[in-house]
Image (cartoon, rainbow, N blue to C red):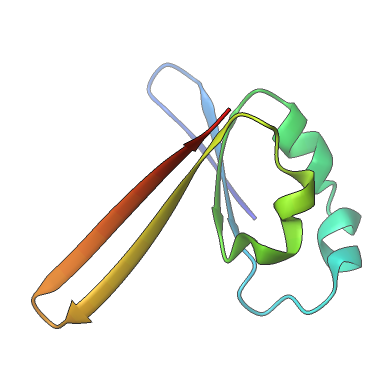
Length: 78
């Protein structure tokens, strides 16, 4: 997890769960507290934490069918 601050002192948390194999690793860092903080949380490889995400969130799926193209699919959950 990395924490960043904007110019206005807003916090942003970045999580990369690519190498995480066990949900307990995620819970041990206090993931639920970060998500419930109201701050922006960006999560890569969120499959393990889908049950812990708030009802209202965005999912952004990025695919690259070739070297020159990236496709962004955004889904709003409410």
